[in-house]
Image (cartoon, rainbow, N blue to C red):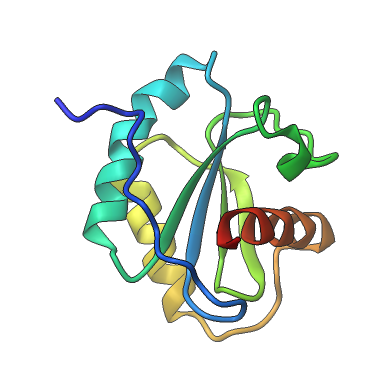
Length: 128
């Protein structure tokens, strides 16, 4: 079985390029631990995207003031703009459909200032 601790290394992504899928989780959450292998599978299936796993307790500075109430919470960004932030059923097909629909949508409104701030912190921390 694939070890959930090893997420494939993502190549650096320049600001404004490439889609990001960021899972905001907590290590104590059983649902998150169960979701990790599915998230890793999606990362391997979508090599053109960047997938990041953020434990909001170990990396509280990345979450900032965001109050994550439901796990897993996903942040999806088009490389420059946070397009989605919210809880998502911990099923790979649900995330795959969300990614496809966001990528097919006309670029436009983002997910809000709080989502954008979280994305910018994650992008800065993980692109360095």
